[in-house]
Image: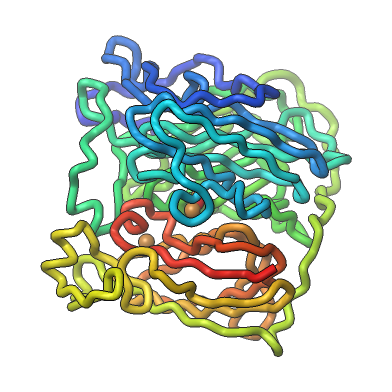
Length: 454
Ligand code: C2O
Ligand code: CU
């Protein structure tokens, strides 16, 4: 386990600034430009776009069964909209410009107001030009507490990200065809809660709830926890029926979340959240450990389930999604607004990816079903890159090889040349986006939608 120098010439750093989020009960979020020190002190600060002059934005927190009402005010230089990632909410509040709402114009506001049926770890982020707006800082954590939350000593939300900054502190240009046609925008600096290797003091033997959230544009993190023992208790907000004991590697694709309940078990002076890279593991956050060990709490925790919508595989309506495009896979043509374009014409429009031969959001939905029907979607990744497919509005389960269902998720990673099948009950009426959360891929054409008739 090592520390590393970032951005070539920067020295290894360890910042001991505070890492707590401003907790917000405020019902207003101002999206605007602001400056914040991201690079170590001595380096220039960074102009970001953020919510309420904080990066990440304030922690929004409510209790399961309550409503959340947030007025978003747009003081950015371009239109925006806010998506409440992973919430099974009212379709009109889903924050997708052109599908569920008109974008919030510069100087305008939008009143979001929705019920919160589920507990869990979620996040909110811009859903307009999201490759740019999320990268510039327009995201924050969203926690819905169980009515009877598990007993822990600390509850820590950790949003991991990789931002691409220039040496002068500016956010690197978005004018980059390589990002659009390859893995996506991969950063050159790892952040946890907007900071390089932040510090979270803990006591030996303490029990922590760690809520890992990835706000990365495209990087698939492989994370590890060193100095802890415990279990994964929820994925993408949804409790696991049986907690899974802490594995050595936690794969966290863009937009995914992992909730862990862990005890600080190390005898060392520090515990770590590590990102595993090709050349070794590096601290992305660290936990100075103090005090004599307190008595172990023993048994692991099972979170209470959220409302369930059973899936009937036998009667499910089916759809398939062929994922094509990107460098090294030779997509020859795709349809855009009903017109067949060759690869050169597509590239001229910044389009490099297609779902079922269509680049960009199609006019007709991938599937059109009635509320209560079950749906199965088989996906084949015929490209050289991984994709993190995200369904809005409903959680799905993976249909595993033996025909059983995996845990509920809202974002699934599909490796190159791999296939996956998901299933869900279409319980939430509306038009729901289904897209790659590698944001350059979404911008480059990887998005479709489904219709659930009420
Ligand atoms: Cu995290 Cu379409 O969103
Ligand atoms: Cu993708």
